[in-house]
Length: 118
Image (cartoon, rainbow, N blue to C red):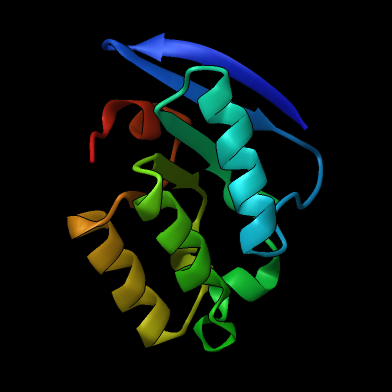
Protein backbone atom coordinates (compact mmCIF):
# COMPACT_ATOMS: atom_id res chain seq x y z
CA UNK A 1 0.00 0.00 0.00
CA UNK A 2 1.29 3.43 -0.95
CA UNK A 3 -0.08 6.64 0.56
CA UNK A 4 0.34 9.82 -1.45
CA UNK A 5 -0.51 13.08 0.32
CA UNK A 6 -1.74 15.84 -1.98
CA UNK A 7 -3.41 19.16 -1.33
CA UNK A 8 -6.59 20.28 -3.01
CA UNK A 9 -8.40 23.53 -2.13
CA UNK A 10 -6.56 23.71 1.19
CA UNK A 11 -7.32 20.13 2.19
CA UNK A 12 -4.59 17.54 2.71
CA UNK A 13 -5.78 14.37 1.01
CA UNK A 14 -4.32 10.88 1.33
CA UNK A 15 -4.74 8.92 -1.87
CA UNK A 16 -4.30 5.21 -1.35
CA UNK A 17 -2.72 3.12 -4.08
CA UNK A 18 -2.65 -0.65 -3.81
CA UNK A 19 -3.03 -3.57 -6.17
CA UNK A 20 -5.19 -5.61 -3.81
CA UNK A 21 -7.75 -5.50 -1.03
CA UNK A 22 -6.35 -3.64 1.98
CA UNK A 23 -9.44 -3.24 4.19
CA UNK A 24 -10.97 -6.48 5.40
CA UNK A 25 -12.38 -5.23 8.70
CA UNK A 26 -12.77 -2.20 10.95
CA UNK A 27 -9.27 -2.59 12.41
CA UNK A 28 -7.70 -2.42 8.95
CA UNK A 29 -9.67 0.78 8.30
CA UNK A 30 -8.62 2.25 11.64
CA UNK A 31 -4.95 1.45 10.97
CA UNK A 32 -5.15 3.15 7.56
CA UNK A 33 -7.00 6.13 9.05
CA UNK A 34 -4.37 6.55 11.78
CA UNK A 35 -1.52 6.28 9.30
CA UNK A 36 -3.05 8.91 7.02
CA UNK A 37 -3.91 11.24 9.92
CA UNK A 38 -0.34 10.94 11.20
CA UNK A 39 0.81 12.19 7.79
CA UNK A 40 -1.50 15.21 8.08
CA UNK A 41 -4.42 14.12 5.90
CA UNK A 42 -7.98 15.12 6.74
CA UNK A 43 -9.48 13.20 3.81
CA UNK A 44 -8.75 9.77 2.36
CA UNK A 45 -9.50 8.54 -1.15
CA UNK A 46 -9.59 4.80 -1.81
CA UNK A 47 -10.82 2.63 -4.64
CA UNK A 48 -13.76 0.29 -4.09
CA UNK A 49 -11.46 -2.62 -4.96
CA UNK A 50 -9.45 -1.84 -1.80
CA UNK A 51 -12.45 -2.92 0.27
CA UNK A 52 -13.27 -6.56 0.95
CA UNK A 53 -16.40 -7.71 -0.91
CA UNK A 54 -18.12 -8.18 2.48
CA UNK A 55 -18.13 -4.39 2.86
CA UNK A 56 -20.81 -4.22 0.16
CA UNK A 57 -22.94 -6.91 1.84
CA UNK A 58 -24.62 -4.82 4.53
CA UNK A 59 -25.71 -7.94 6.45
CA UNK A 60 -22.09 -8.44 7.54
CA UNK A 61 -22.04 -5.12 9.42
CA UNK A 62 -18.53 -4.33 8.20
CA UNK A 63 -19.57 -1.19 6.32
CA UNK A 64 -21.27 0.25 9.40
CA UNK A 65 -18.28 -0.52 11.61
CA UNK A 66 -15.88 1.14 9.18
CA UNK A 67 -18.03 4.21 8.68
CA UNK A 68 -18.34 4.57 12.45
CA UNK A 69 -14.52 4.76 12.74
CA UNK A 70 -14.39 7.60 10.23
CA UNK A 71 -17.17 9.41 12.06
CA UNK A 72 -15.55 8.93 15.49
CA UNK A 73 -12.20 10.26 14.29
CA UNK A 74 -13.70 13.00 12.10
CA UNK A 75 -11.92 11.85 8.96
CA UNK A 76 -13.51 12.14 5.53
CA UNK A 77 -13.46 9.08 3.26
CA UNK A 78 -14.20 8.97 -0.45
CA UNK A 79 -14.69 5.56 -2.03
CA UNK A 80 -14.21 5.60 -5.80
CA UNK A 81 -15.83 3.02 -8.04
CA UNK A 82 -18.71 1.87 -10.17
CA UNK A 83 -21.46 1.01 -7.72
CA UNK A 84 -24.09 0.31 -10.36
CA UNK A 85 -23.00 -3.32 -10.34
CA UNK A 86 -24.68 -3.85 -6.97
CA UNK A 87 -28.35 -4.78 -7.14
CA UNK A 88 -29.15 -4.56 -3.42
CA UNK A 89 -31.68 -1.80 -2.77
CA UNK A 90 -30.48 -1.51 0.82
CA UNK A 91 -26.92 -0.90 -0.41
CA UNK A 92 -28.16 1.69 -2.91
CA UNK A 93 -30.05 3.42 -0.07
CA UNK A 94 -26.95 3.22 2.14
CA UNK A 95 -24.82 4.88 -0.56
CA UNK A 96 -27.46 7.56 -1.15
CA UNK A 97 -27.70 8.41 2.55
CA UNK A 98 -23.93 8.37 3.02
CA UNK A 99 -23.51 10.80 0.14
CA UNK A 100 -26.25 13.02 1.50
CA UNK A 101 -25.26 13.34 5.14
CA UNK A 102 -22.29 11.14 5.96
CA UNK A 103 -18.60 11.58 6.43
CA UNK A 104 -18.11 8.85 3.83
CA UNK A 105 -19.00 9.43 0.18
CA UNK A 106 -19.23 7.13 -2.82
CA UNK A 107 -18.14 8.68 -6.13
CA UNK A 108 -17.30 7.60 -9.67
CA UNK A 109 -13.93 9.31 -10.12
CA UNK A 110 -10.91 10.45 -8.14
CA UNK A 111 -11.46 13.98 -9.43
CA UNK A 112 -14.99 13.98 -8.00
CA UNK A 113 -13.59 12.66 -4.72
CA UNK A 114 -11.10 15.52 -4.52
CA UNK A 115 -13.77 18.13 -5.20
CA UNK A 116 -16.48 16.93 -2.80
CA UNK A 117 -16.53 18.22 0.73
CA UNK A 118 -18.42 16.48 3.47
